[in-house]
Length: 116
Length: 114
Image 1 (tube, rainbow over the protein chains, first blue to last red):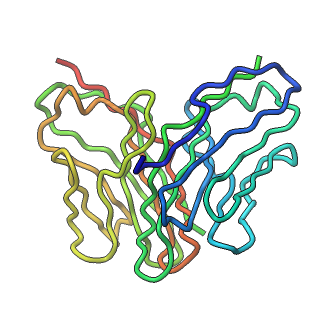
Image 2: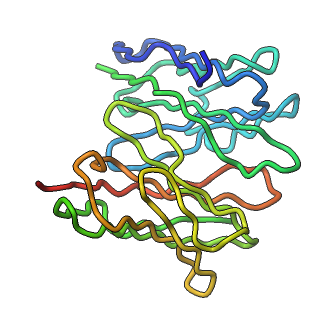
C-alpha cells in the first residue's frame, strides 16, 4: 500500500512476556518515528531513525524497550518483560527528510497493546 | 528545546458553531507548526502546517490556523462545526533545520452536539 503499515493492530499479552511491533514506512521515506499514545497523555516520543545515522533513542522509557530498522525500511519495536503500564497504542510514522523537508509526519493506524 | 501547550483537554460546541482550539508553543528557533486530527481507532493525519509562508494557513475540511509570533500561538479555527469534526486534535512543533522530531501537545477532544 501507499501508507504506513503497522502490525499487529491489536496485541494482548501477559505480564512478563516479550512483544514485537512492526512498522513498514512509506517507500522513499528515510525518517521513521515511534510514538506511544496513552489515554489522556498525548503522544510520547520513543525513538527516531534517520537514514543510516545512529537512531535517537532519547525517548525510550527503559532498557526493556528497543527498536531496530533493517535496510533503512521496516522497523521493529521490541518490549521485553512487558508490564501493565506498557499498555498503550504504539504509533509509527515516517517522513521525508533533508533539505526542503518541512517535517510532516505520515502515521500508521497504530498497534494497540494490552498487558494483562 | 521546544514544547506545546493545548488549552482544554475537551472542547464542546454545537453543530454550526465556531470551533476554536488553542495551541501555544515554545521554541528556541523559528518553528514549523502542525495540526493533526485523529478519528477513533485511526492514526493521525495532517490538517495543516505552517512553514514560514503565509501566517494564515488553510487546511482540509474547512479548518484554518493563524501563526502569531508575538503571542507564540497557532490556534485552530473553523467557522461552522459539523458532526463529522468530532475527533482528537493535536498541535505539534518541530525545530526548523533541526532533527525534525516533532513535539506534540496532549490533544484536545472536540465534541460536537446536534
